Image (cartoon, rainbow, N blue to C red; front, side):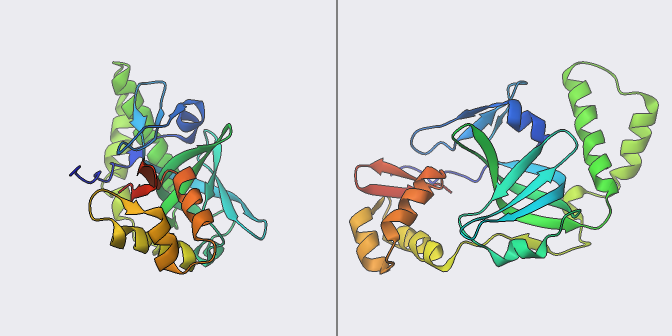
Length: 228
């Protein structure tokens, strides 16, 4: 029996790196990822950015965030009340998975955490600048080192000024997701059985959406697994 795919580390990166990178679709257990210009493979992203717009077309909600290098959409499967807690101008810490639909890259958020102090955007930028300089073999100047040492007395991951917003799926999506986990005995869950036992009217459509977004994959014809 194949071992479950372990959750990937969320890499700190600029939005512009995702935009310029190449989206790579993997087969089987391996997660899809962005191949960046510096050779990294980013399947989960950790970024700090400002909310610049909120969109709701009636069927799907999205939020556009900007970290100073570029902007990108955060998308969920369907309308989610959690995103209603965000306002334009909010600073957020986002953990999520980069995705691509057509030629447009976006992020499926797993966690969004509001940050009160806007200075954290500058701290993250400084972290990334120094890391980039290290990769290039350059020495950071003394002021940069002093600044980052001062700011990093606080860990980005330990910010607790605002509660985190966990992005939940809709009720029908959760039902399908849970049913796949329940019926998977190690070699995948049978799609017909999922549709029958879930009793969700649009189960087949939801399964296709999960597969399109890379959350599930068809391990063999008629059998799907969750990528975890």
